Length: 191
Image (cartoon, rainbow, N blue to C red; front, side, top):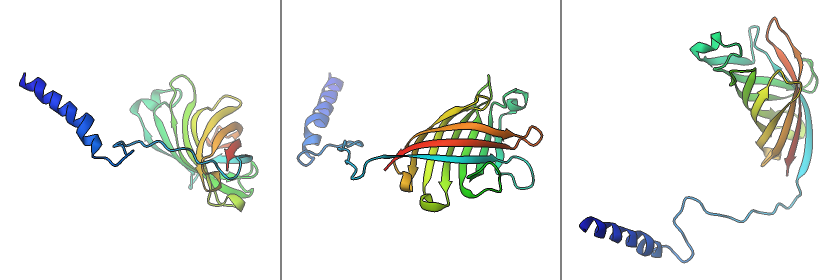
């Protein structure tokens, strides 16, 4: 009986007395709803066409394996491997074409059945009006599909609050070195 009385007192305390200590209209919560701010400028759609150079060979690779499960060597897909990247982004498919940014992030070989990556990367721009801005890409990349669609989930600078998608198409793959060039067509809605 005493236990039931204690629980009743606690319920009374938490439902009536403590909330009454808050200022009028104020609630104790970690979440406060806010009305969205209507932007002063309408959203615009930008189309970025870039070439991503994943260099795993040579003395200065831009993609480095940093972790690997013991079973990854036995897997046909490399399942359990994690790679950190700082890949050049250029305007053309040649590595010598104009550098406009870097793709910085990670990809993990995340499929046991096919060559499927979990990709998390920022396209960090260093050139032109987008200098200092980023586009964040996060999603699945089934590398042997002709075209892969990967979500754009955010950005910074001129791409703040970006959303959209990226279409990735392998331009070239060197079977001997493992180096890859991928054409990215990125469609971004932003303010």
